[in-house]
Image (cartoon, rainbow, N blue to C red; front, side, top):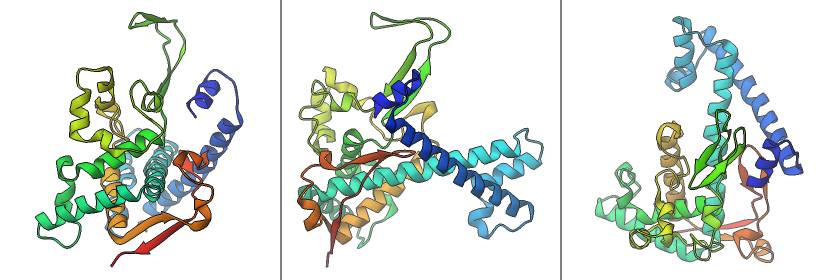
Length: 298
């Protein structure tokens, strides 16, 4: 996947990039249509309920009416980015997580044990918001999320830029001026020098003892704040990361508590590892989901 983006950046088209480009175009057309329809309803005072009236786009329209220089077309583009960023990234992350869990019954058991213990400690019979306020309350759940992101990131490339101003020297290497520079979150996570047996799904890599064991070594880069989260960090962090993260964590928690997740008998014939599952490049990298078997837990 990173290679396809790189070749496109330097002017070489590939079949996978064309698939991504067409998917992005279709997503943009749908989102722009929905954004304009929302703006028309707002101008006619036909927004329904507080959910729509207090939404980001509704507030942006009010600021525009007060003299904000943002145009109608720019607002529609903002609506497109919000929709694509909030829906496609989260759905891809959840899809990959469900796939990894289906392939790892032991991960489900460990995660279920952690969740039930956290509920019991709070005298609760269901999930409660307090469980998700601090990572240390559910460390294994967060480790499962991180390992899924390492193995199968929904967006494997963070940035493609050009150093137009001047050449760059980084760790003794000179990057000529006007070079295309690709920053990705995929390569390090699959480099055996940093991650032993990278083809294995092992959430334990992200537990406290493993993190402590990497300190002072080359591998400690895995725990850098700019690398460790699916939604990035700092000024470029996804503005809705807290909502998306909470949404994913609670959804996966409830699924694991309610169901035993496995591959269907037919899928088991061809899928032994997540690497056997084909994927496609839409607006994000999505798995072609195999058949599943969900058995309700008492």
